[in-house]
Amino acid sequence: MLIISALKQGDLQAQTAYSSNQSQELNNLPKSFLIGEYEQPYEQLINNYNQLLLTVCNNDMPRAYDIWAKVLSDMEDYSKQMNFNLNGLKLWMNMFFNADGTIQHIVYFPKPNSRNMQFEQLTAFLTSFCKYYNQKVPVAVKCSHYGSASFPIFDKR
Image (cartoon, rainbow, N blue to C red; front, side, top):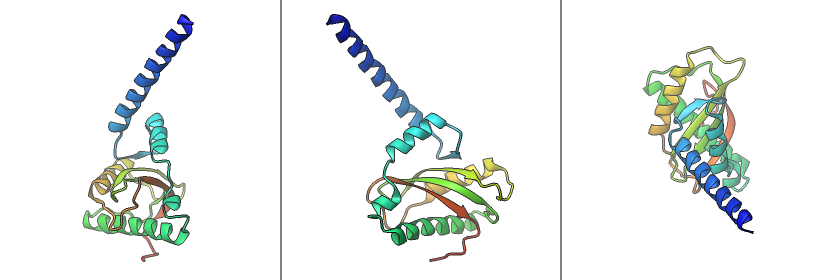
């Protein structure tokens, strides 16, 4: 019995240390990065933002799409203000939204037919956008959305 108790206590200490390490990794995670970088903290981020935008929108596809389209449109507008050319970029993006309408992280990967560019510059731009952006209508709870983006945006709503 004493051995089992000691093992359980050791497991608890290991779990506590593991949780603490994961929190530290998430705190040090860049605002934007390529899918495939920071794999373990990215998985934890997905677990922490386990509600999807569509779910938060009560499975109302037009509402979720409008929010996504608005974010992409605002990103394109911001790129023009920053004199950063997004045209020709085609990306898979995973955005992590906070309940207050801010974006915690943008994780992305270029599609095969995307324009070539220095992705360090895109990462810097997306990091800046995360710090700048705040939705006019917050989503009420933290959530994530994995979607596709192609620039220029043609569906301005």
